[in-house]
Length: 235
Ligand code: SF4
Ligand code: SF4
Ligand code: FES
Image (cartoon, rainbow, N blue to C red; front, side, top):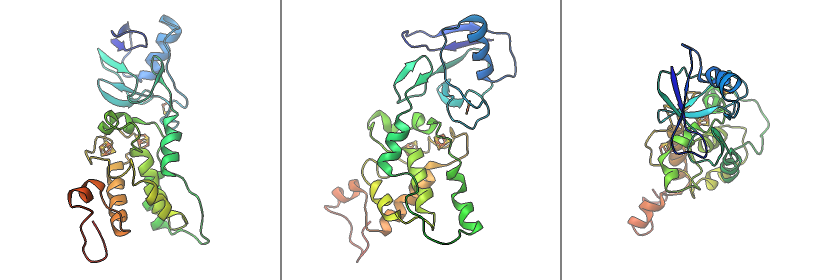
């Protein structure tokens, strides 16, 4: 099998011939590094789809190296919209940047228990492993590098939906600029998520909640000269 890897410092991919079948891309890269080319650089941790550190693009689609099983002539590249440090390793500081912009964490907890039903509603979003595959797949970053983006907005919805959270209103306020209204609702972030999270659905929910709180889409507001007035709630 031939594996092509786009390495830093070159426009053409480097090809490696390996004699493997039905193994993960990470297993193949470990073989290349230990037996063929020790200079090849990539990132990994848990080897079991938990740590989120091994995301790359294969044939133009985001994959976890520890889960994806390659085919002959696959093309492997670093994920998009992150600075390449070397080969397949990228700077992951955008995780902190976007989560900070959105206050995408729990800040205050009310007394009381959460029901099983309420917990089930936020479980999926809590499973995010911060692999940033959804950011790499999102077309908005080509025009707005400050877009808060899919994983952070999903986390915001997780906390806004948590009945114990005391800062829900502030979190909704934090995602108005460079956030929910910048999303095109294209859905590209959904099929690439290894945790079966659908950020676009959570963004729709954040938009709906924002509308109920009196916020409005800035594009619609400018189109209608300041917003649509339906007698108390603006959309
Ligand atoms: S649905 Fe929104 S967040 Fe998801 S990829 Fe499209 S523009 Fe990006
Ligand atoms: S939402 Fe999914 S694709 Fe995005 S960072 Fe979390 S686990 Fe990765
Ligand atoms: S090595 Fe941890 S998710 Fe792949």
